[in-house]
Length: 160
Image 1: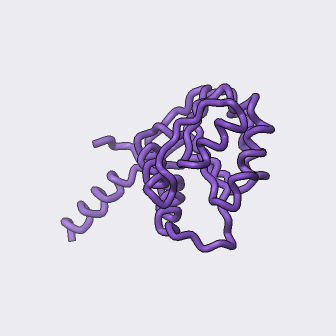
Image 2: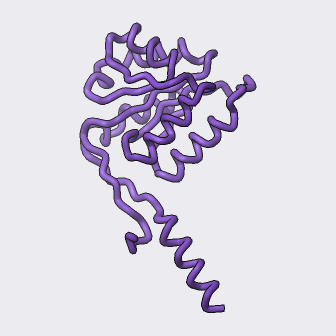
């Protein structure tokens, strides 16, 4: 077991970027990706179902597609975050529309926070991420070591 409070993970110069959008936001994400295709072409892209296809069609960039969100795509992206294979996520979501897979979306966002990856939920935040000085250099993020925290709590309970 790693005995550090935080575990460092270094994001390389080329980032692994997940692109996701709810149905009512797919065109907006497609427009955004097209406008930023010169930056995006230097990175590895993945996305859920229809969104991945739309971005490839609009930009000509390769986007590894997973299942659509309601069919497990959100969970697939979450698994890639846990594996260290997604460095940040652009997720244009519609806060006014009920989604049949809202629990999956919430789980995906929770995983993103747990693993300390940047997340953009709208165009303005996505623009800020892409214009960051960290887009073209390495960055080390620190992930809280939850396993150590659990072990410390267990040890404290044993002492009582």
